[in-house]
Length: 230
Image (tube, rainbow, N blue to C red; front, side):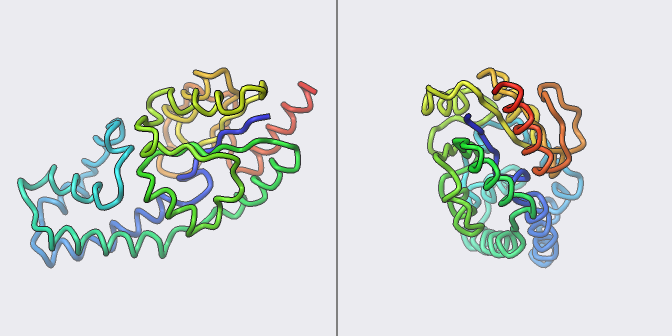
């Protein structure tokens, strides 16, 4: 059995931590007179970035820089550094493993599953999250878009995971995003399980075989499917 698991908003509260970072950033932008950037955030224009392949590969400081470039022609290195340090510190002080995540990963190990983390963003940022959350040792392999050069908007990383474990015919994908995790799972013939939480929870899924409210339910689905196939 092979289980591909997403990180952000599946195993940990990335969107909530990011929201706290933005809230902490707003008064900083006001003090600096960065009202265009403030308006960009308040009008939720950042949603236009969701389908950007390039942004799924960037580090946090690069994301901050990219955000400012979309609003201003130029921003001083000092301002960018201040913003990055503020966002980074606030983000990691609020980043937490979901209460059901460890039991989920341990439960998969107990039934003999190979677990692969498949996640978007830069190598540095995702590995820093794994270290902060103490999750790395639960996985048999890590596939990070910043290392492969492909985001989960494309099927490459899912196919890579399947090639890593060619003997595993029973494959599951567990994640929070339909147009990446679930669609990618379908590309490799996996059973797809959408966990409804985080930033994308309100979107209507098109590619999920199962929709669950948490990882406890996801584990129950995998055990049930495994028993049926046994």
